[in-house]
Amino acid sequence: MALTKAVIVNKDAAIPLPIPVMFNPPDYQMTRTSRFAELKVPGLPSSVLQYVGSDAQTLNMELFFDTTDTGVDVRTRTEAIVGLTAIQPSTKAPPRLLLLWGSLIFPCVMMSIKQHYEYFNSLGMPLRAKLSVEFKGNDTLETLIAKLPLPLIDQAVRYAAKSGDTLQSIAATQMNDSSKWRLIAEANGIDNPRAVNHGIQLSIPKVF
Image (cartoon, rainbow, N blue to C red; front, top):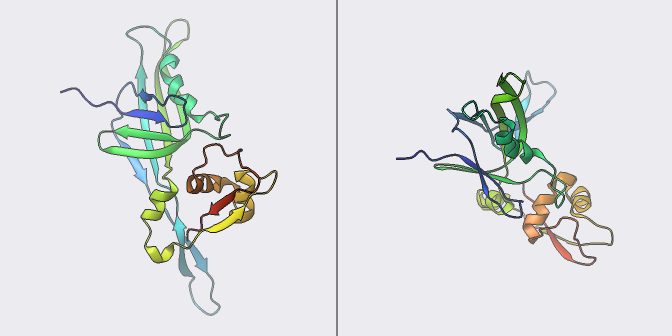
């Protein structure tokens, strides 16, 4: 029975074809982090911890590439994955990805990639490479809300877009964080973050 190859899908590509790895990684690590604020209370010998939220889950793995059998520059095999850190013209951000390997289904973005070339031919062309990759989970707003207990979900606020508004500027004024524009896009089914028509009624999610 043939081994299932791990693949990475660029969800923002015009044609989202899977990008297979050359060799499956020997392992991977997943990390989930909770954040707590320290509340200082005069007279107490220690701080009181208050849970304030969780970071998106991260996944780290190493991918190996070897073209010593063909003599082809190994970068011809790695460039498709390295390119997943490039800014997309339509979103002004790196692409949304889907990492698939057996039972692993991980919506994510690529946070970092380290390229290590470790074998070369007589002309100095690399023939063997190791990519150390970090992905960060990128679940949709609907998926995240579905995981919350109902009492933690507040009703969304309605906002009428003004001339010159972008999703980034609306997120900055309504959510105090311009990077949360994707939450507004997901909540309103908007594909182009720059196409915000004057007067359109937007739902601004409030998740606690």
